[in-house]
Amino acid sequence: MNLEFIPPPEREAIAEIFTFWFGDPEAKSATYADRRKLWFGRNSAVDAEIRDRFLPLHQQAVAGELADWQSSPLGALALLLLLDQFSRNLFRDTPQAFATDPQALAIAEASLEHGFDRAVPLLMRMFFTCRWSIPKIQSGSSDRSSCSPSFRPNRRNWRMCWTTPTSTRT
Image (cartoon, rainbow, N blue to C red; front, top):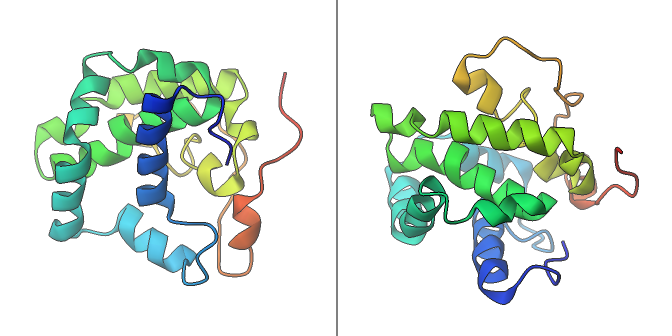
């Protein structure tokens, strides 16, 4: 994952989001099962860690202060994670957990339109698509026309999930 073209302050924040959410692709102990527990589990310690580490970034995203992140695939994905996934942990069991769904949905749709989902490793791609992530599903949208084909990581294809596709949509 090459973040060199992103300015240093944003690069550090985006790298921290990705390392937390996706783990280290080089770690031999990293498994899809571990990540799945983080992504879809219910754990108050994880919620607290996300609150401690990412609440200020989330607040900046909500205020539109990170809108320039939408200009690159990795920046858009980091922003999407903040507004869609992290909101669930930050504000679990409250209406505020879903307050940023319209923003997340707009970012996901624009990202798909620009082919950003095709420019990131497969593991990350699923968070752009409505099949998994979910901005469309969580927003209640029934439109699946812009969904990427579903991809389901598992222990056999875990390492492949970190491969960035060479072709992108136009």
